[in-house]
Amino acid sequence: MKRINAFYFIKEGLKNTFTQGFMGIASIAILLSCLVIIGIFMLTTENIDLNLQNIEEQDEIVAFVDEILTIEEAQDLKYVIDAVPHVKDSIFVSNEEALKTFEGQLEGAEDVMAELEGDNPLRHSYRIFVDQIENSSAVADSVRMIPGVIKVRHNEFVTNNIISLRNVFSVAAFAFFIILLALSVFIIYNTIRLATVARRKEINIMKFVGATNWFIRWPFVIEGLIIGLLAATLAYFCSWYLYTYFVDNVFEGINIVKLLEFGAIRGRLALIFYGVGILIGVIGSAFAIRKYLRV
Amino acid sequence: MVLFNKVTKTYANGTKALEDVSFRIDQGEFVFIIGASGAGKTTITKLITRQEAFDSGEVVVNKYRLKTLRNSQIPYLRRTVGVVFQDFRLIDNKTVYENVAFAMRIVNAPAKEIRARVPHVLSLVGLSHKAKAYPTQLSGGEQQRVAIARAIINSPSILIADEPTGNVDPNMSREIMDLFQAINDRGTTIIVVTHELSLVRRMKKRVIQLDGGRILYDKVGGGQE
Figure (cartoon, each protein chain N blue to C red):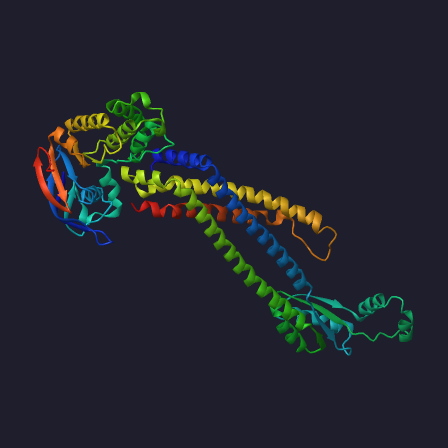
């Protein structure tokens, strides 16, 4: 692009964006709506993912130590357990600590404790955490084989369900994102094409005077770029306002659900908005005039 | 220079527009192409500007052999051929000045040159005082003169006018023909497609008359009734 033309293209692109009235506003409004829907979808999936991660992090394996081992021998098992592949961390829980916890849980049933008469029927144990939930069954099996470990408690049913849920969610989220993107491209393409119909005479004349296809295309591409930038900026602020409103008003006091701060996702959101906005605006514009260039 | 050698053109719907048409128009000539509706006049202009491809034969326009012309070369061919349409084809939201100037921008002319040349060409067509007007504020004859100014602004070697007097009154038709003569006097080849025999007779120029896609007559001085 020669310098002399660059100024002309930018000037024409700006002029076209702001002088085509309703169609310009319609293009920005439709792209804005698509981006806000994509934004809401992204914020929702990020939060669902965060809560699934929390559930995953709570998944633990409990390994009970044979009571014939002394407390020192039981504590030494930590090195063996930590050496098992995919073990992220392990916490030793002595039978004394376990009894205290048990006592706390049995509040109001002091007579049960009295019946024990100072005996501790509980075993030393380990709370084992894995690096990824997919590995927890394999880790449970390996720990079960360690001499000195008498029993392993691991809720495979819950683990498997979390894995399935997350996998289904990932696939569904990706598919939905692609559908949403395709729909946005389709709507924007048609909106820009509609706006272009009004200017087909101008394009036709330019072709007869000897304009190259790119000379005609550039102002439309710049127009698409401006529409994309404006829609992305507006979508960012709309999503910010809507998300903050929901977090502050709708989910206030609901502690069971953990929610991301907007700041934690704003970078990715802006990247998606500007990326998708500019891409759809530019490609939509470039393709919309294709038909009229065949003169 | 325009050369047609045994050119045949059939449209997709089966209409045979040109059959074995041959003629040569040299640089600086003034030629009328006449004939009834469907005779093939407009097809000739479409082939010269490469709006349409032909089936067989050879067409050469200036230095371009159209049979082997690449799509990317079409804009450069069109820059050597100015076209004036019956319906003017002006951009309504641009002023007279802008309508003419944008044809220069397309060929990447410097702004300084545009500022100097556009007023000059507007004065040539007698529209200096209408530079700031919009096409809708002009009469048919004035709009046609804007279209002529736009067609000649880049100094094409050939100017094609397709029924240029179809939408203007007889007085204006004569003025437009005089304008074409003035442009021709500067060395530009003029090809006027028309069915107005009175104009053709008055100008006493070379006439190519078409009938059913074939050349019926190619002489200087006027066509047959």
